[in-house]
Image (tube, rainbow, N blue to C red; front, side):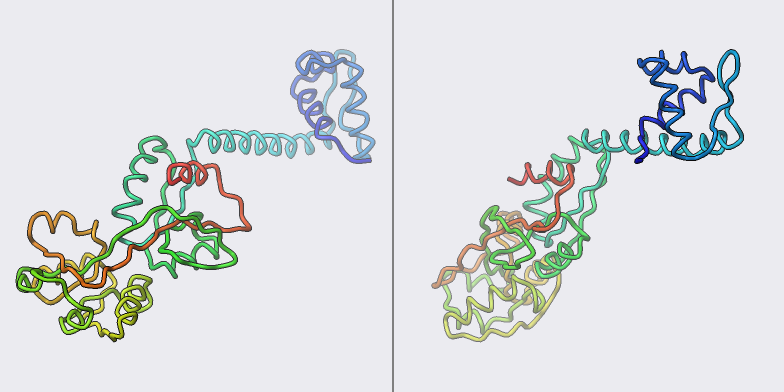
Length: 292
């Protein structure tokens, strides 16, 4: 016979009250139902749990031992239910998300601000990395949602388009003369190029753009941060390939100049990725609704 959780619940109330009738009243069941549950539990455990007295019941030594575990079990269950309710109300839990630097600054941060204002008790864990890093963290379960450059293909991930971004070459005032006329890819390649490190999707994109025009471009400076590319471009070290929205303020202030190209630089797509084989938490689902 399989034990019933209800038997233990009746046992707990009976032990606390020391009376079958009072336990029945508190549980809104009949006294015979309480008596039956106790007998069934004793039969299943093959031990006497209560001594029957003239005015109630008293735990046997074995009953005292059982009560200790039953109390702990029901306390744990209640704590679990309380925790689940907090998660449902988004008053607890974690949001684990990853993206590259430019995506964080111009796409993710405004949404995180909204989410954090609405759900301040949710802990936000943010990972920065290249698209390849974000894919790896998603697949290993370190993050729940990844914002990535498209196209990206992986049978383990479900990927959705979010928006398009424009990239461009920018220079400081030292190269202001190059901003007057559109440049060919060949002319651009002869300027010191400041590019993100090899292996990044942005680096692969710009190399593909040069290659499509028969030009092999070498980076004079390779950096892992777009902020550093912008800093060095402003200091006159060459042309940096950056996300246009990332340098809007510098372009508006005249600290940087955008170089025009004869062959347009295509827009790039950004999307979000989640694991196919894992359900999202309630917290992650809420943030996903903001993304969408």
